Image (cartoon, rainbow, N blue to C red; front, side, top):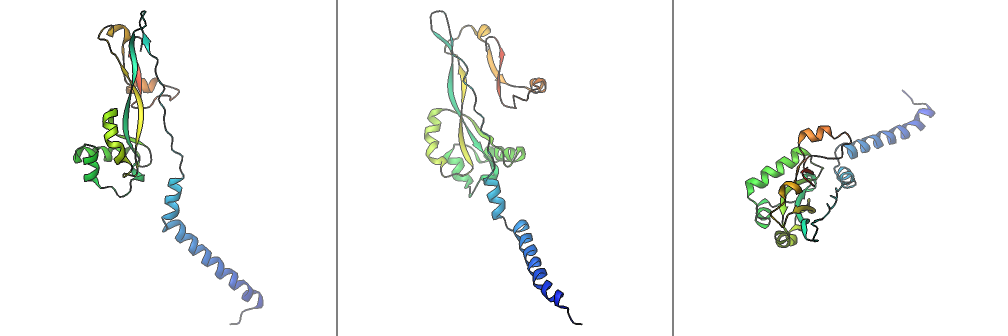
Length: 188
């Protein structure tokens, strides 16, 4: 069986095409380098909570003001080389609580931010801030909570609370999401 001249010329092109297809298959299926680069290239949405107004009485005394508080946020897919024991010691959390919170975050979404530790005050934040650089995939998110310096006018001022499932269903604009704070009663 002899090959014609046109077939001889086509062989190198076919051979080169097959090599490219095999290389492309290995890059897309087996090579994780490009998958990791694509994950790093994702857009990360960071919610900024608005400051609520300060409420004064008629004598210009503060009745309600904002108080900064912090949450430790985790993105499970970005965690690298985590030493669980040292993390728990640095952030003053039990290992079982850490594992439960991390598994909950992974079930919610491996690529979306989840709250790992809530309500860290500024004193606790100062003690853990230096350790945070050692743990990839974790960061601090600031938010404001309401502070009521006086113990009067509770019925009038009202209070904030986490949005419930009924209120989420009524929200047709999808403005709120689980965990957001809304005014429950009174001026709030």
